[in-house]
Length: 46
Image (cartoon, rainbow, N blue to C red):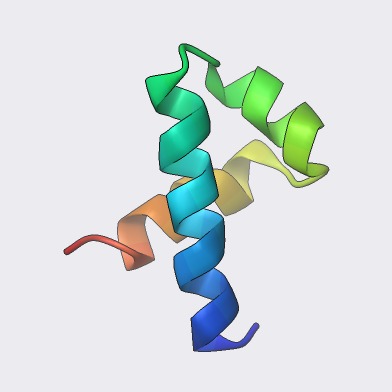
């Protein structure tokens, strides 16, 4: 995974979370696993 893509995925995940989607809904929307979402959020912290 390229680091540039990590940032944009992290931003999209945070945006969807701000819209009230839960992790399962975000995983379905982005077609990725919940584990990948957790990993991206952990790696993409400021």
